[in-house]
Image (cartoon, rainbow, N blue to C red):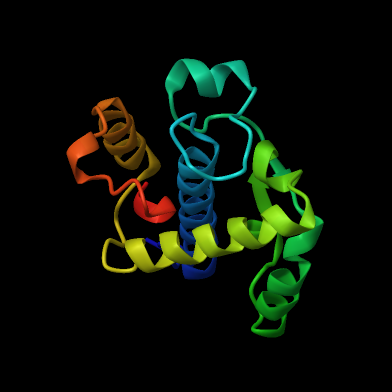
Length: 146
């Protein structure tokens, strides 16, 4: 009986695409939340408002082409890492630097949790965003407390 060899390359591509989508959606949830202290407007996509986490469409972002080219030099397919949620993909140049920082922070946050799925992470974010902000812990003189 001939059993086909597993396609590890296809499996890795699916894993990379799922990880990138999870990090991008987490960054969008944190940046576009009404509770976020950033300059981003809250997301206007109705599904995101209802779900309280990013669940809108993913769009190709031209500003991530340098990342795509770096992946292609390594022999990996680039398009898996160039999609961002619509609210982040349309950010202007100044706000996009904040998006890149948020993506880097998410990558750092998730590097020790390789099997975390978006379903589990979105449930964690929903629960965290439902919690009231403890005003005793916020220093009014520091703008970066939130």
